[in-house]
Length: 137
Image (cartoon, rainbow, N blue to C red; front, side):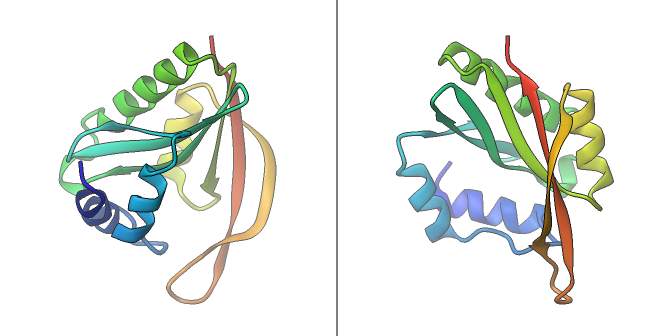
């Protein structure tokens, strides 16, 4: 997928916060620590550094939601991270994003921190970010 493809899908998936631009995805994909899994229906972008893997973003086209694609992307990026030597996975999620929190909990993540006012909403309001972690096999 190209940066333009990723930005288009991200824009369809992210309506509660600012979607990432083509230029941002180009920069992220140019970083050798960042890795991409998925396809034009759902993708996950993650970073591997010093034995830790962090989910930077995951996006599912609204047309394809509730079909297990996000769960499959979660599994794939965690497997790739573990094979690369990561022993811990991290992510953050808006405290008002119940579907994502349910997905991450089902994938074995547990809260380990909070970032107050981390996500800015189009209305100007903010949402806290719950930092979650899980060990990787």
